[in-house]
Length: 337
Image 1 (cartoon, helix red, strand yellow):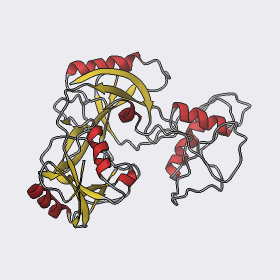
Image 2: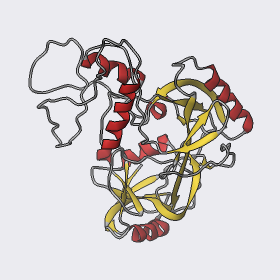
Image 3: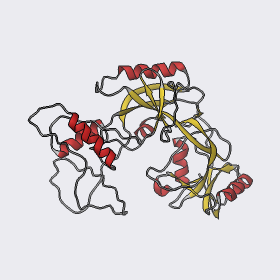
């Protein structure tokens, strides 16, 4: 059962200019038996690996929480290995902390409507929930004057970043915001956007254009050191996004949302941990914990993981041959963790 909801902290859709909030929770529960993981250095399809694990151990690996994920990562090496997650036919609404299928829901009228493959959940101060695509972009216009660098810093601290524009429709939407600004009439209606020019490139060939230069630095050179990232803040600092099991918990979160005194023009809405997917575990476990590799474009109906990617999971074709991770006791053909 869940302990205390600690605070509201900012989190964003990939939305240069939109502020979304999420709730952090600290989970307090009795210690559970930890599965024993075995890296099997044989190359098999997912189904073959499942049969092997059920004979020699108990099943392919199930990962129920961040502790399991860390121990699984320790059992892995650079190569990908099958785990027990496989795509099914039916989708269900699940909690991101691993607590399984949602027994309690508080959908607004007409929700979930699944417009545009909406598989995440947002909660408003009136206690009702709405399904939403986490990649939805929204833009906010600031009338404050500043340099491009100052504008980047402001957007990153309060939202996500300066606007990136991927389509003509997004460009038109921003143009409307500029036209609608009713500020000083002698100032031209022009704004900074996130486009910049540089000659830096990444060692791994990645095409990402993200930069985080230290403001005011006078250093020079052709290589960089990197400051600590805040990726997955909720899971790294606490446990997970909030899961809501009762109407009382829902009301408690709604009070926190109402009490927020942030920007008055932004709707008081927050991310919660409810999401929709059709994946299930080979051993029949009801855990809804997921740890997808961010930015992966892979596809397939089975899942593999690699220590090279900090234990992140990717989709892979089930007929592909790979090493795999078993769980449970029994004889082992590989490493045990």
